[in-house]
Length: 109
Image 1 (cartoon, rainbow, N blue to C red):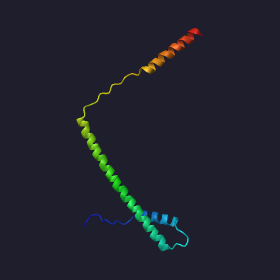
Image 2: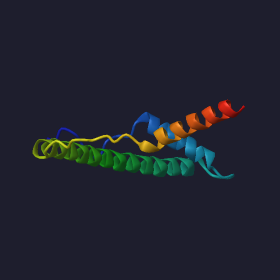
Image 3: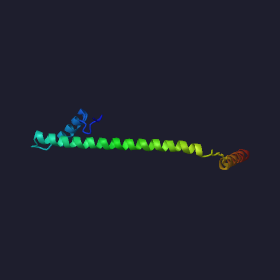
């Protein structure tokens, strides 16, 4: 016997949410049986959506684990890259020009 059955019973939250949506879209003259049928359809849709999201989450988790293991392997293979920082000359040039202009202004004023 399998551990989990393929036909799981929907949760009470899903049932309540489906009934709330069905009552919200209820038309005048609609019977309770029709509303219940609509709620069951909505409930099936919610269950299918949740299943798809679980599959997507599992697939994403697998991809993340695979990429993480590949990146760990890549780190061991690739040599270290040395980063060299260059001092930018433009800010120093602008600072020197501003000090020179300030000195000339003070000297002439």
